[in-house]
Amino acid sequence: MQTESRADERVEHPRLWRVLLHNDDFTTQEFVVWVLETVFNMPPAEAFAVMMHVHQAGVGVAGVFTRDVAETKVKATQQLAEQQEYPLLVTLEPDPEGARA
Image (cartoon, one colour):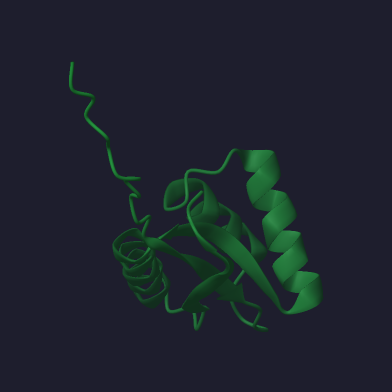
């Protein structure tokens, strides 16, 4: 009887990216909460908490996603802000936690 040995198979998980919202003096808090609920699918209480963190700390994480998803959410947020004539700055950066576990 022959036994098949299987090499350790490792699946590379994609690197994750953080979508950051930056505070400004013009974008309304209500708009930021609405964006977090609409684009980032957050429940109202969580969206409000994130908005308050952005307001108080100057920047906050809206979510952590694969690069394609993060870029899509950044573009959607930028388009909505432009439509409403808000200068909301939204950026992305590599997640320091690295790849998905």
